[in-house]
Image 1: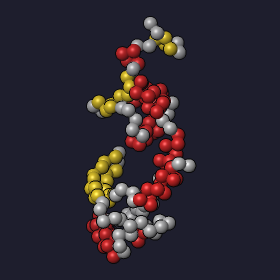
Image 2: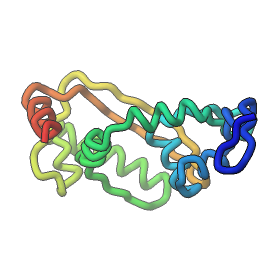
Image 3: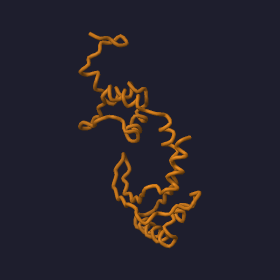
Image 4: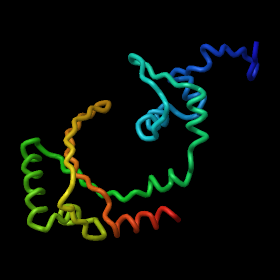
Length: 162
C-alpha cells in the first residue's frame, strides 16, 4: 500500500476526483472552481449531473499555466452597456443601434461613447446568434466579430510583449 499524509491511497478512486475533491485538491472555493470551469479550459468531464476531474490532468493543467498569459487575458479591452427594458423596446433599441452604425460608417464609437478611439467594423465580419442559459439567466446574444486588422494587430502584439 502507498500512504500519503497519513491515509492510504486507492489509485482507482484517487486518480478521479469529484467536484468537492477537486476543490480540496486545488485549494480553491466552489465559486472559484466554477469560474475556472467556465473561463480557463479546466480539464474535466461532466458525467450525468456530476463533474469528474483527473488528478493527473489537473496537475498538467497547473504546470502548463503562465501568469503572464493570465495577466494579458485580463487586460483585454472591453466596453459594454446594459439597457434594461421590455423586450419589445429592446428590439427597437437593436434596430436603432444597427441604423446608427450604418449612418456612421460602421463606427461602434457611436454606440459606446466610452471607447477611447474610433473602431470601424470592416466590410467582412461574422454574425453569431446564440442562446445561452447560465444558472438563473437566459441570454440571446448577437455578436459581430472580425479579425484584428494590421495596425491593430501590431498594437496588440506590442502590448502583449510587456
